Image (tube, rainbow, N blue to C red; front, top):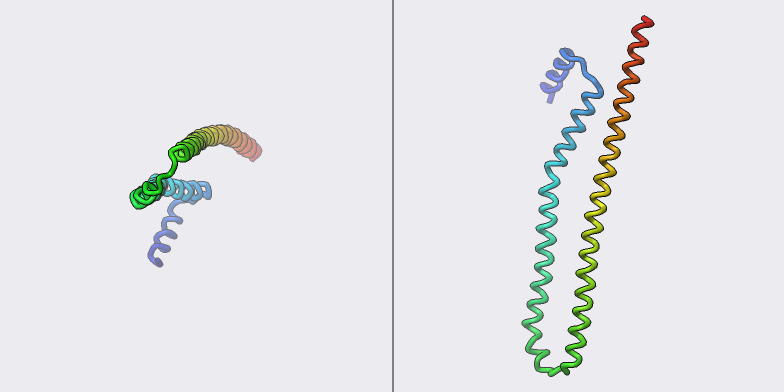
Length: 146
């Protein structure tokens, strides 16, 4: 650690440091590191959620096997079973529609967020160009008064 500090101090003496360079380099490194981790984090979450959903599906499959014999022996009226089936199908359709709507809403929200970021980026670049021109004019005016 001590040796690194000595090398850093020597390097500092050789080149003039800029606060902008320091902040840009460190910020860029952090962002690149975050970007590199995101795909694996999202994939891991997706894998975990997929496993969770398959586990739920397996539980209902196991219950089906275990309870089929029991319910078959009850000789439940077919009219009641038809009504249960209709209710189940109605609920399933509602759930599927809600999932589809939520997915579309999520996609549209992402699109809107991306456009917002794009607009901000354009605005920030325009402001930086304006700021750079202003600094350039200021520097010219201070040099001419010297």
